[in-house]
Amino acid sequence: MHLRFNTDSNGAAVLDFEVTQLVIAGWVGRDRDAVLHHIRELAALGVPAPGAVPLFYRVAVQQLSQQSALEVVGDQTSGEAEPFVFFHRGEYWVSLVSDHTDRHLETFSVALSKQACVKPVAQQAWRMADVRAHWDRLELRAWIHVNGDWVTYQQGTLAALLTLDDLLQRYFAGQPVPEGFAMSCGTLSALGGIRPASQFRMALHDPVLNRTLEHAYTTTALPVVA
Image 1: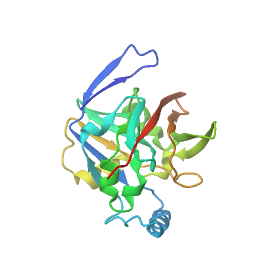
Image 2: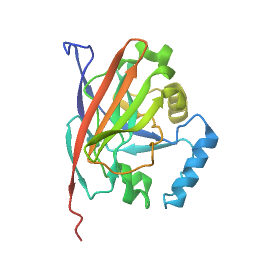
Image 3: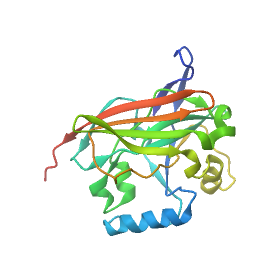
Image 4: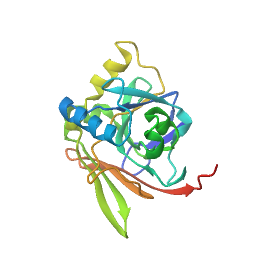
């Protein structure tokens, strides 16, 4: 799967990236008690508990898209803003992705619910080397469009999530990271609870270097027929 990123503010520098492996990291909160509490909350809604914490879901690379208009099946899907880290020519880069998920299917299989939906990716990226020292200060935020207004849906810093180094160590166990590897690095809780919305905006703000990665997309629901 081919993705293209602008790597400076004026769009003059472009990075072309071929994704060969996509992993979505789930249950990555640093506060283990809070993660377990969230697992119990979702279990009460019928969502199966993960087999491990954190848990890594492999998703087909063709599910990534940088388009702003997507189609989904049914009206029970919703986005989740996440840092998107990828390995290209010996270094890591940071962008932004929405782990758009089918919430009805999630009650049967979390893995299948993630595979069922396209994952929108921003068109900008930063060098990981430029943000690694202040990674925890990066601010992740998302909004949904409800009744004509944009409502804050997620908000917090990456200090709430396991670090990239921790996730890579758990996933690769010391083995080399291959060219083309990409990981969606976990999300923050939804303010007011997880709920569907056909318009989604997300941002990753760097308060130290004063810059922001942004992406917005809409979803059109296809009919569920049997």
